[in-house]
Amino acid sequence: MAAKTWNVIDSSFGSQPVPPNTKLSAPGASGLAVNYEVARGGLSDGVEMLTVENGDLKIRIVPTRGMSIWDMTYGEQRLGWKSPVRGPVHPAFVDVGEPSGLGWLDGFDELLVRCGLESNGAPEFKEDGTLLYPLHGRIGNKPARRVDVTIDPDSSEITVVGVVEEVRFHFLKLRLTTTIRTRVGEKGFRIQDRVTNLSQSPAEIQMLYHVNFGDPLLDAGSKVIAPIKTIVPRNAHAAEGIGNWSSYEAPQPGFEEQVYFFELLGNDEGETQAILKNAHGTEGALLKFNKKQLPCFTVWKNTTSLADGYVTGIEPGTNFPNPRSYEGEQGRVVKIGPSGSFDFDFELAYLSHASEVEAAESAIAKLQAGVEPQVYAEPQEGWCAP
Image (cartoon, rainbow, N blue to C red; front, side):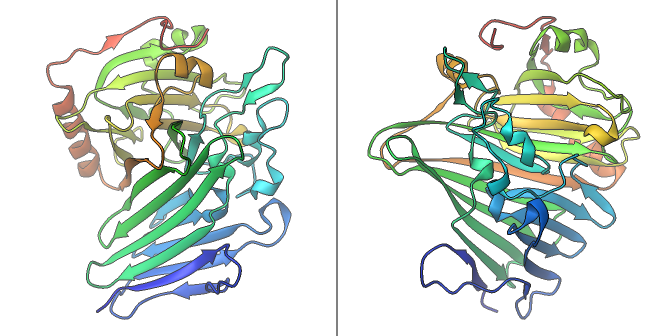
């Protein structure tokens, strides 16, 4: 049977997208559906949500928040985290440019949020103390201007395409076109992001996939496993924990975050992967991406109390999340010519059995084979901003 496509969101005047509270399904595509809803009230007022149903898998996409993935559920297992922020929060209530540079945190509660596109790291300030670049950039708080959903019975696949723009007059003019796919039998999703420079002047961009996991997948004894070439602690506090960087403790009130920067190993095509597995190795989450597109890798450990946001971030990026000017000086930006574009590919899958975790570990071991990781005990110049 032929694939069916719906226009769900269109900011153009005169458009007639599907109304809220609509369930999209296609003849011959059993188990595949998409629910379109709009929240009412509180900080979520006006937030649009797409719940993609693929058998036992549910993926909640938030077009209002830059096409972020709010969470993913397979059966009874939810991948995501319990943020103290009760979201998803509409960007109208997130002042990204507030003087502290930390306004981004007012809306942070997603499984996957993109950081960028002009900058994606720590806040940066001018000499007079005013904000130059906010924490993690603006793209995650830009509503999509268009979203289309396709259900294809022949390929047994759902495709969601969203267009988000980060444009300012006299400054960067960028368009993110994201294509999110899931197919029958998959326990996750595949993303292809294309960033297009709408200007006739060259542009520099950054991208970071801030992928966040909390309880129950994250627990005492959970571990990150990746094929490592080099690891560097971000600061002196992270250096104190370098010997146990890959493992996690139980929630600890008042825990101060620790961050580690990596260069990973990959195959000849640049493909690499990393997993977070629970303490018993019976479940996990698998991330796949390409080093040629996303050469930098960051692990953020924030194992504070459950009430305060017990979470870890597993983060492939074009750069490390240092201040934008520092990363630019190190050449960790993507340069896009006039009307040019750059693609990013990313996959996330739930590992529901010990055998799947073991298979993922085996694949990582093959990438690691014969290479001893270089582990620095202290922050390194060129990696870590002063």
